[in-house]
Image 1: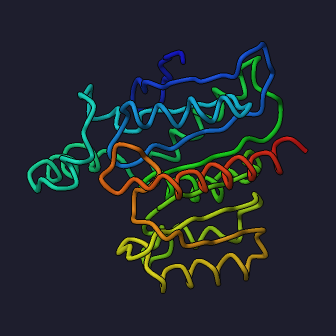
Image 2: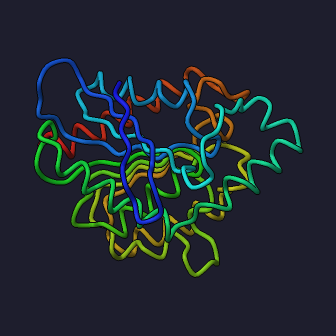
Length: 245
């Protein structure tokens, strides 16, 4: 793992780069972090994806809030005061518009790396990042070939910037994995997203895992080993089928 700083329109964004063994070049995957920020469990996702043969970029989307100590999901999920800090200090600094402005810069960074295969890239995201991954697909259809979203929330709402409204612009292959009993992505929202992607003739899959929201990251209180492994099977399968053709 290497660290770098990517200059965006709003400042300096710390980012983490993971590469397979060898010299490359390799297909690139942009990873959108979950809503608890950068920490060892999030870095582990980048490390494992790189071992599958991908150049991985993991930016810290909370950079506008300034430096912060790694957060513990077990505390954030259970302590109302800590959750208030997360929502106020960190979530208030991000949103679809600024994050997509950042994403354009991240994609430019990847395109400039000699270790990255020329052409389109893949994206994946978790929780908050799952939403951003889907929005990126509709914002940069000429640059993204594969889109994954794991326990992403608010993917099809009544908001004017709801991700599902971008379906007509999406050209990537899409995989969305929801959780059971997830208030941020309930069955009616899954149906709404399914209808939008179907109408737009997107190549997509939407599944519901028998796990709770946040199951991929190993430091969360809802981590599910079997579901995490299924996540790896589907994620690497998606990237292999699109970026290695």
